Image (cartoon, rainbow, N blue to C red):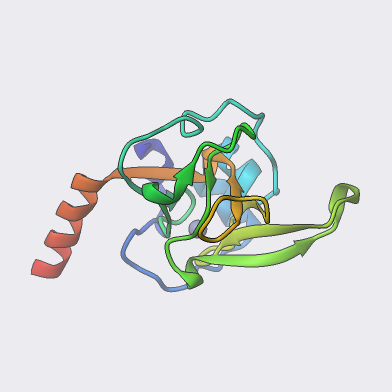
Length: 158
Ligand SMILES: [Zn+2]
């Protein structure tokens, strides 16, 4: 999804510094569908994400800023219509916020680096965590394990 990264000066899979930008700035650099989910807390239609039944091995990043969010080995078939994971890649990769909109008590999950809206977390997931991170596919960027390893190698060789 290189189109997501084009004209996006904050996109980085290695820089973990927090990103704070105005909504105006986000609107300029994000594709409309990513902006709608990330900044306006939108929800994509179920069963529309190519990641819903995606099985490649690798890492999922925030499409707005490049922050690593989930590993493919924590992804599972939830049947809910959105890509689902049982555990984030690290504690700091995600921010949890109570969400009482739409008459429901839910927990919103946001990107730990740029605070993009990702989706919600529910407590009906599989072991070992029992959690289900229900994530909009639009806000996910995927990199295959081989590509990520290569990038890591290049980084450490610098
Ligand atoms: Zn982000």
